[in-house]
Length: 152
Image (cartoon, rainbow, N blue to C red; front, side):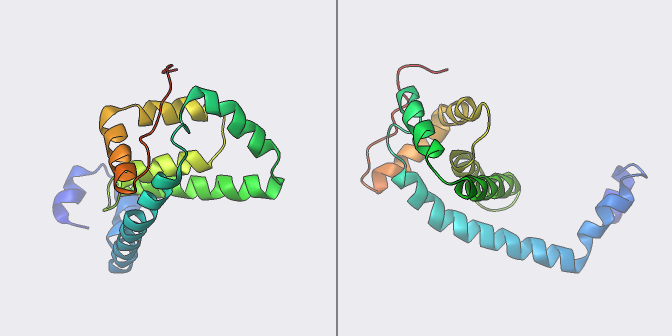
């Protein structure tokens, strides 16, 4: 660990942080960063372009919930685990190279949890995020996302 960092950290944090500076750990984090960046650059635009344009509109919520209820429980488990993995990777990409917010959005789209729709709409309704998503959809010749009339 760099000397300047050990001076800034409280004594109890040094044993927790110092293993992160092991060359093997740094190599794994570097490789993971490159992999997440490549996957996010290739897969996320493809997934965003395939979302129905009214996916975030309140009127499509009931239709999506009904469709999910008809699926096998194993499907829900796998989908939630993959969504959670994408959210964690997106959080990492906020600090590592990659498309962090887009990865988090796709992870949220896949996962099912109470209040999911409000969280999705809050993120997607942010003007910079909506512009980025619609730019991806425009390049894929897909209609822009329709958030519906209501913002709740």
